[in-house]
Length: 385
Image (tube, rainbow, N blue to C red; front, side, top):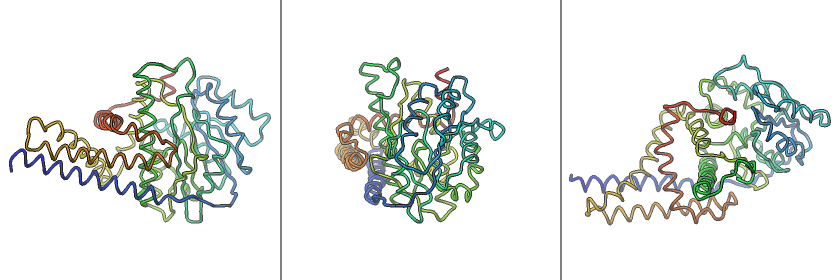
């Protein structure tokens, strides 16, 4: 075959694969039902915190103000060098449901967040374990809504955690076009992650969630031997744990969609902070199964090839019409997915950003994604110090 014919075949395959995956995600989103579990089990809310003195008062006020009535809060100080521990400790005098403990550093020096979470879990009493991060502000009904997801056969419940730039300290908020574009992209990309999470869960193929809005049964933790099988990964206390539950247990996985379950979080304050965070997230991909790695390589490769086919049009005119048609088709199915997901996650304006944000997502996955596999990264708390 000629080069033009190879391009046409390649672009056609890329469009077919990309479209099939996207359509399946749309179907999966439609299979996320509202939840009505009415049981009131005792819940342990566990937060690992390191150098979070600025965020600690906001977090504790949000957690202590939950409408759910049967729960405890455990803050695990992960070796903070600031006043994180002392600030949290002051709250314990007036709130018996709050405890502050220090992470057991003997568990792991590499996977330090997992070590902190293990410390919290072992000290907790709840039948249900709920997790969020110190830079998050859960609404007052967060725990109540998460618990509604635990119907009889559900062992793990995931939720949405949108970035909210208004949570950034005033002295770190940047203005200007590039700063605005970064924050818009961060929020859009997080919404796309939630779409993939909810869509795959709806299809029974869960692979992604965020530890900022996550809960599971203590029985599930015990059944999979906690984090013992995934300690080699620095991150992955969310994605890798969820995949373990799906592959090795009979428990179902669910996603809560009520806006009262959303957990707003502070976005990265700078491009460097964003890149370091994302390299950390991508690093867990090194421990995905081989079929999963190949799937995502093929998906993102198809997305890239559709763009390259479009750019090759002026060089190979015989391919131009089909390349344009396939690329336009890709934009249309992206639009359908984002409209469906945007409606679910109260991001109704997101469809207006599809064209330029999807191009940025393509560049981001192509250029930043591999860095998580081949380079190190810095934690947010290290960037601040």
